[in-house]
Image (cartoon, rainbow, N blue to C red; front, top):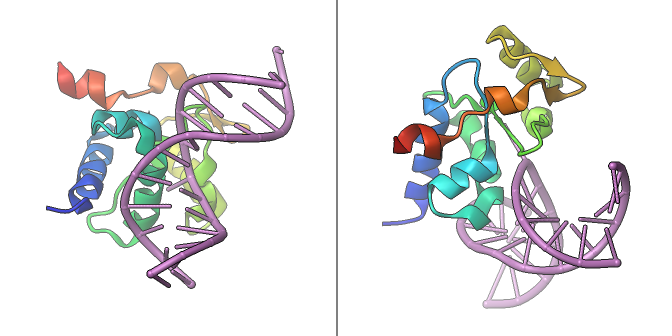
Length: 111
DNA sequence: AAGGTGACAGTTT
DNA sequence: TAAACTGCCACCT
């Protein structure tokens, strides 16, 4: 009934991202048919901090594979640590082999 | 109520 | 090739 569903869908998709994989704001937005609202996805992540169950926002990066949102975590290294813990290697605040680890919700969910 | 902001992305200079 | 600008749409003050 409200765009709140949009956020719910965003959280749901983010939760579907398997460990060790990463996705992008644009891909998620596009999956919901709102390719122009990629910024809103980032905003949704911002609100997901108090969300339960916790949304793995650390698995969501920008289309360049850059950890742009690390500043919004408890501490800046938390995002990187969480990703490295899952096997994702971060180099220069950027996901290494991003193209290989990229998890596209459209491709994965559409099958 | 109106204006400003932003965890992006695509296009242009 | 790299850097900068604009577009976009909901949320916040």
